[in-house]
Length: 407
Ligand code: URA
View: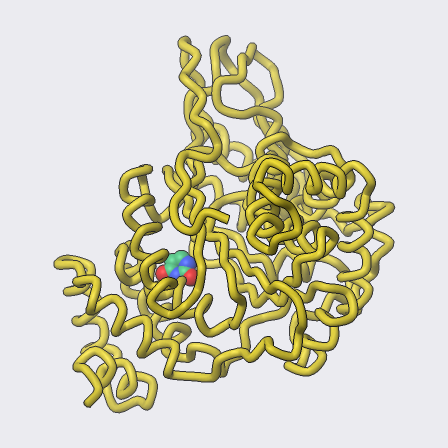
């Protein structure tokens, strides 16, 4: 006998339950929460609503990653080729931008010609050939999540721990990998505002994975400021290339390397996470991760010349700068608002991070947009979203906590 939740989900996907009824249920779930059992039923019903991916045609250790969404988070562009360069198989399905957060598919499509709509067979064949593929999630995978998520987005019922946990984990369970690293963001640019709620979300996701035979490690990471310096699809591709070339902002390098090291250790390609990290560092230093990114781009129809010439990515011609008006330190980024504002332009390149000293006239950020006038207008709205104060705030570590399967 299907549970009430399973019936609700099935009937909603079939169109026998209206948006209004589903919204009422979602609002109640947001207000009162769901028990773990209910969360598991919801997750399993969403997995059962569509197809699951069979990766058994790919020999080797298959790992996946998922971020709960942030601003400037381009780690998939780095993690996927870097892990593949280390010998981990990455058959990855990614999503598009949601709300103030960015989406991996949109970033990849900033590369001319890049195709994200491979057939299932092309997807499997490509992973067997080069170790990595990144495609859009098929409409047949967890259709219940796709329909419910769209409704949550419209009805302001996204920020609920059990709804996020089931939405994240149904996708990961259906996507067929044997190990997942979750990057659970905590802070003012994330769905979870603080470390405690992010850790709670991590614990539920880990348990949902375990109950479906999927090993999960969760990193709780800081989203009180954008990750790295680049925000916006084109700029984020350029930053990902810089990181794979052994440069780029230290926080992006740290997070991407930490995720890959967990995968490498879990795959048994190194005896410990510390030793795995050395292998990852080597793949960055030798450019093996960057070469793998080039192979990935070529295999999916993209123009891999961007690897050698990232500036060839077409940039909007308008420019404006945000400058500090006072002396002090960067105290706060209004991260979610910055993420939303970046979507009105080509993107932002930050020149500063929390706790950095500033002086009048110092450039805090550059805005790229279609025209100078638009860039100036966006820059004026970006200025109050970066707060300067007289005291230097304490810098939060990037990785705040770790939970779940120890590799
Ligand atoms: N990411 C998801 O996949 N689902 C959510 O509900 C929130 C973030």
